[in-house]
Length: 401
Image: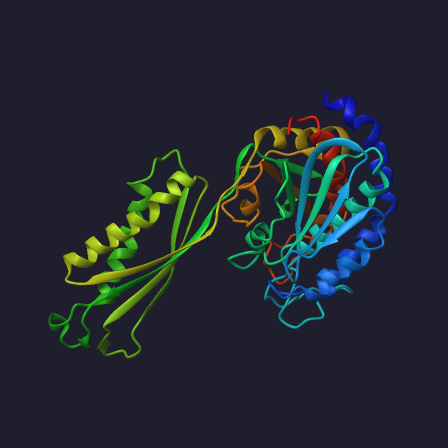
């Protein structure tokens, strides 16, 4: 069924993607030279708007000051698909030596969002040229602030961008997978990301007289070990849960037991059911350990991004696009990643899928991981993203809205 939709268009889309590839690379490099942090993407969104205004048939909207939505109504009946690309950078100093390295001190596109934006811009141009054949409506989300909680996705949702959207897709370039390998998982793809701060309140005093104190440092150390019981003894072993204590601060003087100690950490999982149970478990275990030694606790638990869970039907169609329309790229098997993404905010309002586009190339020296000061990605992967996004509206229209 999908073959009949893809075959007539795939070669045309591929030809156009090749023809504009140098320009897409140029867009990506321009954004890479001029990165902007979350909620500060003024020049980036203006740059994208400038190029989008030159494309016939688009309606542009500014749902937030630094995001952008372009709407394209096709000439054929069909569902409404949203395609999302994030556009923000990270507070990292670029250490690459190339002519497109960041020109902004301490700010860098160290996660590939410049590539995502360039891929989507390339897909917009192709789809606008196919507007007479395009089914339904496509909305292109250029989203700000993925890297910083509370995230730009939720702000865009609050601004109404998902009204009338039947399904949504997105993709991420992957420095861990070789160029040409594209993965689209069924079900969980990325984990939730929550964080906590736990204060242990004891009674301080001189280090020479620990018997007169309720030592929060010693008690907090016991809590660190006991918190692993949240995973090891309170979570179904078939479920994935990561609880990491990443901060421990107490006192200033070497000879003084402080009144309090503070722990902080991260919690990640793929199931909302598991996720809901974690705060109460942390509080119960920590309070129990503290009470046993005469102390008490205060817990602040901040919910971050929810898990990204792909709709299997949509994911299956995207895999078919890869297999039939993106040669020599191929479908690649991956396990869900414990990283997190605010794309989940969109998925609460419409089913969708999130793809991983391989962009590692050891022969070119492109091997650094995301969020590394030497990060780069193989720009050949840009063409794969453009083709995936441009083919998707036609292929997905075979699914019932």
